[in-house]
Image 1 (cartoon, rainbow, N blue to C red):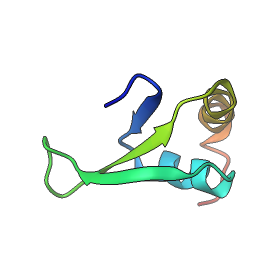
Image 2 (spheres, rainbow, N blue to C red):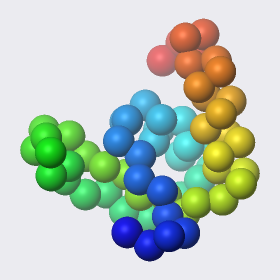
Image 3 (cartoon, rainbow, N blue to C red):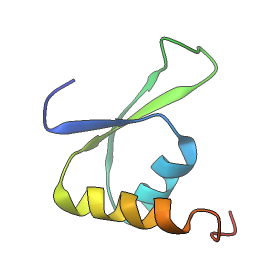
Image 4 (tube, rainbow, N blue to C red):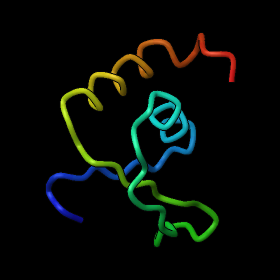
Amino acid sequence: MKDDTIVITQERMAGWLMFNRFHCIGIKEDLKDRNRKIYIFKDSPMLRKVMGIYNKYKDKIPF
């Protein structure tokens, strides 16, 4: 992967990022677990901020 990308292994986090208008630039099969996917996003300070918001409130989000 490039240095300016971030790999997300959790489907819910990837969904949260897409819900918040971050574009997923790639989806690949997880080599460690063929039943899962990895989601690739362009890394940015704003993306990291939105990830932090999700981690803070994920137990309160009803999905």
